[in-house]
Image 1 (cartoon, rainbow, N blue to C red):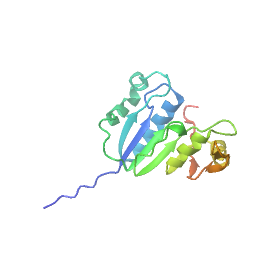
Image 2: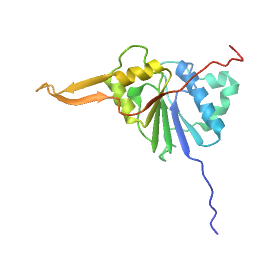
Image 3: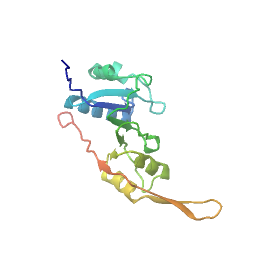
Image 4: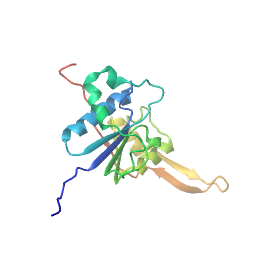
Amino acid sequence: PRINILMKPLFVISCPYDTYSGYGARSRDLVKAIIETNKYEVKILPQRWGNTPWGFCKDNPEWEFLHQHVINPQQHNAQPDIWMQITVPNEFQPIGKFNIGMTAGIETTACAPEWIDGINKMNLTLVSSEHAKRVFEQSSFEQRDQNTGQIVRKIQLEKPVEVLFEGADTNIY
């Protein structure tokens, strides 16, 4: 007889979870929340965040449990059901069957065209504020042929961007 084992969907998250950075803190909170849903086989693909130091989880033992979810790039050979990257949009790469980008977004009134291109590679992008969402929705660019000056492509948002509320722990603050 064949045994049918129900497997959880593979959710791989590329993020700077172990760095001393704002993106590191965001990554830890998000990964922990996804693990706690118990709906996915969660794997973390560590990434750098500029020159910020590593070792946050070692220095803060309550976060060491995240290490058991870490894979190295050589182990990452199966296409994940869900792929998430927590970084700036120009670094987004669609690797999974469903791809999520997460970024703090932007704190000015315009972004680079490469950021819009990055967002358009993903199925969904999560940002931290309504302001960031508006900037991405309102940014558009015309790419012109250098020889003829004719417009060859309009770069504008084509994929959904949603705000993921990030709040303070009112028991602490």
